[in-house]
Image (spheres, rainbow, N blue to C red):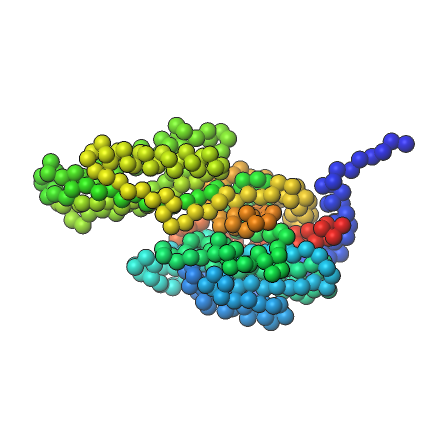
Length: 435
């Protein structure tokens, strides 16, 4: 009689599916029943956004909700972070689930009854504040997950740690925050986390779909600042100056060649972008200095080193060629590692995502040059970070407003899929770990 060999991953998925089919149906029913509540939470957060490390109202609502479910709650972590600990009725691993809480300094342009009208101070300027990246939906989804899993406490084979994190977009200059600070303050300990799952809504992926990638899924990132110093003069007598604006223009024109002539983009993408330039105070005065700020993105340590070295060399040597100087800080205020989905874990949990959304709705995607500080958690334990569709069905992914823009828009019909996915990942991982 010939032996039939069943691959370990297939055995895992078949065993877990058999164990958790009744629970999966329960989760689906409960998530559908919670939809209106989840949408209401999201709209409230959307109407009242708060910037990084300022999520006081937001964290208060979350903590109160978790406490109402009988979940042990810790507050004030990394300034405004909230952690809920739900101990299941059976022994097993510790699964962490994470949502971010902060809004962005963006003035909303979307015509919604719950559009943000909030203003705040950011870097010394008054700005509009908007959930222009979907963190409002992440919080609402995880609150729904907490409500469902707490109602199934006796069936949990382990512990769930709900992490609501401030300042994912970066802490204000001079402050600490985000996932890096949460990790430093022990969020992955007591109890020690075994695995972590997270999701991100995507305005250019159709609602009802999930996209994922094993390995490097989002870029490592660090910001940069370049200050070019020259010599000021009247605009009518430029020969008396060392013009930092001309020097800065040459530097900006040269920076794209770092990627196009040094990085093998057929293997890994990379980006160098200048997003801010500030110099001068009047049309006929050549200023003494110009400040530039930007971002670099990469997927390997070697590419990070190449980009960093070339940014410094191009800036300093170009300035020197014109008789000016350039001070380069890279990173300037923050640095995130590559968001790396553990390859073995992704293979094991892919059947769960496919069973939840339907195999035809779970799509493999190319690397994304956006960045996420979820990567700090993944440096500590295996983790999966996936994308949840938030574009209206039938929409155009090219013309749909992108994240971090005033017109950013999310279709709320995909929220329950996110709730079901996180619940099922938790239960299936616990069941598989127990086996």
